[in-house]
Figure 1: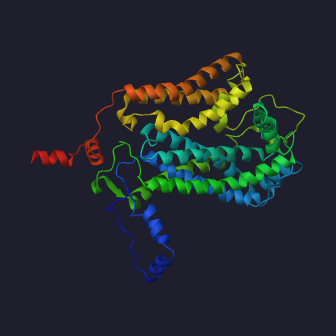
Figure 2 (figure 1 turned 120 degrees about the vertical axis):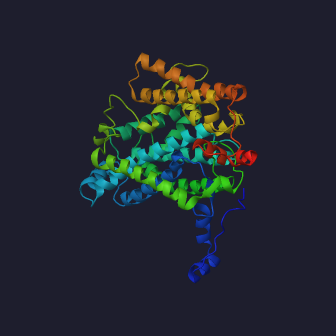
Figure 3 (figure 1 turned 60 degrees about the vertical axis):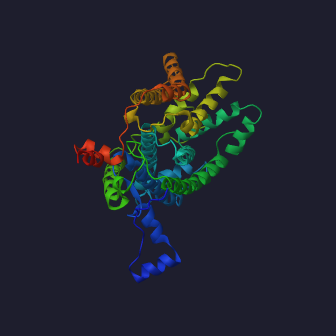
Amino acid sequence: MSFPWAHHYEPKQPLMRWLDEKLPLPRLVYNAVGAGYPVPRNLNYFWNFGVLAGLALVVQIVTGIVLAMHYAANGLVAFGSVESIMRDVNAGWFLRYAHANGASMFLLVVYIHIARGLYYGSYKAPREMVWLLGVVIFLLMMATAFMGYVLPWGQMSFWGAQVITGFFSAIPLVGEPIRIWLLGGFAPDNAALNRFFSLHYLLPFVTAGVIIMHIWALHIPGSNNPTGVDVKGEQDTVPFHPYYTAKDGVGVAVFFLIFASLIFFSPNLLGHPDNYIEANPLSTPAHIVPEWYFLPFYAILKSFTADFILTGKLWGVLAMFGSILLLFFLPWLDSSPVRSANYRPTYRWFLVVLLVDVLILGYIGGAEATARNVIIGQLATAYYFAHFLIILPVVSRSERPRPLPNSITEAVLAKHGGTSPAKTAMAH
């Protein structure tokens, strides 16, 4: 979508004019994040999380590059190299804690970003491609985070790799060869460390490339907004700079405040103490758990305990991957013409139930596999899939949405006690 009222870049300095003619980078930046990019005037702070996700990726790439200079991907010395980084490298403890907690902050920001998309219908037309590329980014992040968790070569690193890659063997015929190919052998060892380290280093740059496509796809239809109403004209927008650069600045300050608090005051809060024990293939931990951001999917994986046509193990693998792949079909599962849950009261309640359900799955993923917890996990898993495959299609066709405002400007003025231009014209 083109915005005829958008300001166009016209450099005044001779150097900038020459650079813009030879390499239009200033124009690109101006049109992407400057006054040349009009944005709906009613965006709230939930729209900060896209910028925060990009910032978190930059932190991960920068700290990861420096850590890679000191890390040794060898089963005999990997654990020792991480300890050496913590003790012998200048500011190594800071870099390591920043990278480890940065992964948690990155995933937390992205989860909130996804939740915002679900609530405000950002996956609906004409932004389907933006959503699909976002799900690809999420999958790349999950793969990168898993391989990064293996690299410290502690007990949880080793046994996490053993358990998760072991589930591939449930796939008939090709499962075991795939597992051996992933690990480079029959169990996690030097080959697996080298492969995971190489991919863990590479995938963030692939993710950055897909993020550029994600932003590019967003700039075609423009940003969604809390009302879900399309932009009607210049009165509905403001330039991205300085209005939203200032607003994003507040979000960035809060992000770094929380991030710094984790690093300096509780750097191991989100980790597992067993990962400070060197990997031992002969000593299985009493309770193997992944990082917190994998727990809901781990709970889904563990919920299938009985064989039915296929083995329970294979059903678990299919369900775990299916729970993420399901998001690809969301734009077509939800057929409601209304985007924002602010005007969809029935959908909003079911979305709250889904959030509670995901939190329950997260708890079950980290809890011991008692009979009670397994049943709760199975019920929560059943609801997760029912929400997307049954409840959402039915609600989108049967609910009666609230009336939408005629424009973004009308919604903003009504919220702040003003009068819309249309009503003012009618009064005269």
